[in-house]
Image (cartoon, rainbow, N blue to C red):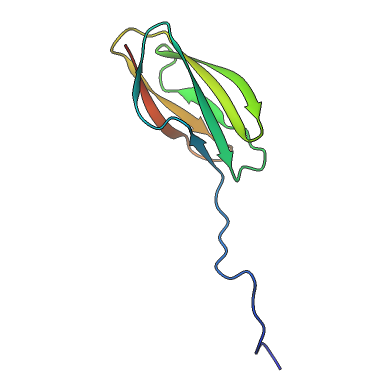
Length: 106
């Protein structure tokens, strides 16, 4: 019979690369001395932990808060002077950093 009548079940199946989804994707202002918590969700990550960082550590200080399932919670503290701003980034192993938003000190 050959291949006639045989259906391949794996047609057009693409494996999606691991990535991080942030609950905050818009730029915002944070008052000096205040804190804000980000929820970063790892999608298709096979238990990979995202690195979390900011572009300028003198504008925002970062702190890991908790891991719940595939959700990672990170807090930033506004330590810079009003008008300063910096990006918020995550990195998965073997990938480039991804910018999620920009925070300006108010």
